[in-house]
Image (cartoon, rainbow, N blue to C red; front, side, top):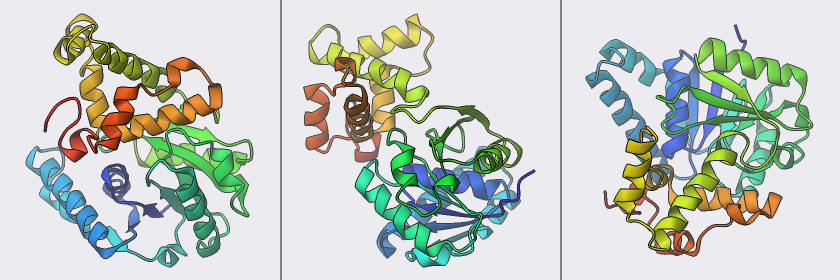
Length: 285
C-alpha cells in the first residue's frame, strides 16, 4: 500500500479532469486547481458529467458517483496545496509554463516528503526537477486519454529522482489506482509517444501528399491491422496541438526528420483546428 492520501491536480482540462477523476474514484482526497474561476467551473462540469456518464453506463454506482464527487474540491489558489502528499501538474505542453508551476509548488507544498509529478508527454523531467529545491522528489507520472479508461501509466524518473520517490509512485499506480505502470527513461517521447508520434506524423504526411483519403488511411489501419482507431481519428482525439508539441520536443532532442511536424499539421493548429476538443480536425465533430 501507499502513504499517499491527499492529492493535488494542477489543471482541469481534458487530461487534468480525467486524472482527478481517477484519483478520486480510487478513494483519495483530491483538490483541483485552475487559473480562473471560469476555467474551474468548466473543469468541475467536465468532471461531474464524466462521473454521471460512468454511472449511467453502469461503470460505477450512483453511490460511488456521489462519494467521488464528495472527495473532490476546487481552487484557484495553489497555496491551498500545502498539505498535499502528491501534486501532479497536467497543463499545456509548454516547458516555461510547467517550470513556473513547479517553482510555485516548491514554495507552497510544505510536506517534506511530498511528491511533485508531471503528466508531461514529452518535456524532459530533469528540467522540471532542477527548478525545485527537491529534485529527488520530482517524477513523471504520464496518464493516457481518457485517463479513467486507459489502463497504462508511464513512470519517468529524472536523473535526480530518488529511489523512495520511485517506489512510492509505483505503489500508488499499482495498489491504489489499479493501473499498469511501465518505466521509461527521461527521453523525449518516453515509450509510447516515441513509437506513436512518428506513426501519426507519417499518416498526416500521407494524407497531405494525396496518397490516400483520410477514410482510406484510417480504414486501412482499422480493418487491415486491427487498430481500434485509425491514425487520423486518433490524432483528432489526442489533439493536433498536443501532437505538434510532442513532435517539436522530440525533434529538438533527436533532430530526426521523422519527428518533424508536417506543414499541414502546423497550419491546422494555426487555424484552431485542434481535433475533437475544438470541434474540427481531420474530421468534423
